[in-house]
Length: 263
Image (cartoon, rainbow, N blue to C red):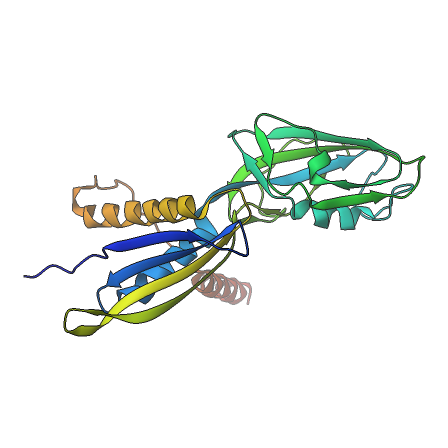
């Protein structure tokens, strides 16, 4: 049987308007494979690529997030929102602690954060807070860790932090946006082959080429495993998956039985 032809042309070109964006073209793909490949890559890039982010911070003199700081224009809630937008590249698998100290009247940005060999600030112009008086003095501690996707404070495992440290939601994914379109191209006498044109925008923590390679490896590892599933060792324990709906039905039935016994 004739095998499905694979694409012969894969290119990554920088976006002239944005240094952190690029245009990926893949062609020619067998008819129908354009949307399949493009959507899979897009979903994997947005959800599964590793990154790093600030997950907690502490400001000297601030005991909780619903407060203000002397001689600082923004309140703690605004500062936490600004910290979520700081793009970071971490070279460590462990939690990294950084400090930010400043005095006088000035605007503090991510570039003012203490330099560290384990962490690279890729958005140094991101605003953090504004000191409004020469008497202003700020001392801040930041905690950074690696991760994937988006993590809320509620879903996070317990991590021991200092007293008065404030946890925040973290955006780990280094991909900001992925958009694609699929066009038809000619291969021989056929005009129904696909061509993918994909625009990938990152936060600077990863290049477009690396994002394409890493997401492809993640998908390939899953498909390779499934193609060889019969060679996998069988599990000795069966896993029961009970949906939330089934759990609700069971709980209702149990309540009904208890009521019957009571009567």
